[in-house]
Image (cartoon, rainbow, N blue to C red; front, side, top):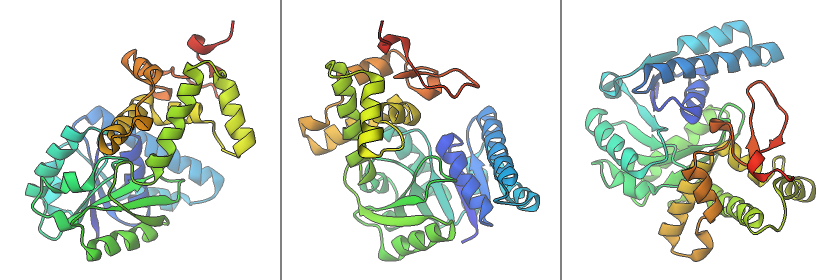
Length: 297
């Protein structure tokens, strides 16, 4: 396995491309937006520069990584040469199904098609292809170059051979793969997202404020980041999308998204990416400031 294609150049896509390129793979990073690709390359370069400054890699390793990376706006130009395609597009079911239909038709018969979805059914994605045995979940954690875990999710028809290949490949990337079965939210988000949702409910019901909720979880439960700050970091739109998947897939009211979360996403307050969520974010500042909507008078 040598040629890797990554679809989607956002936060997860550029991180996945970075890790593959750094480990000697030829990587084509695909996005319909040239501007998004330029931004992704700038992010990868900045992250590599930081690693050089820390002494964790040399300048030559940085240059080799960048030379392994190729930007592309047309999936049809690179999919036919791919051994593995990793889809890291927006967490939207219709979009992912459309992408998989397309890449299944373009990719060679031996190619494995993986998705970085954090909650959408692998079995459902596989059903729109003619290679259900070669469809698998490869759920990296954010930030990808730093976080060690890869959730490897088997669809109903994913073969043992493909699962083993992806487990071994994850290890070559310096990651620790954990095999899980294909049920809504898998393991990571089935546990994490209801906790975040409950923190939002706690805020919504006036039990405590933003800072207080996060402080309790950081100081009392040894979490490195409070659930509301983490929600901002993940993106409130992503949190809401995953809660919908859990609620619809498992049919239990305990997974119903908090009305405050729904309102914030509708109003465009998505966390770090929009500049405001539970906290307010100012470019260049690392200070954690509670958003005006939740600030105590």
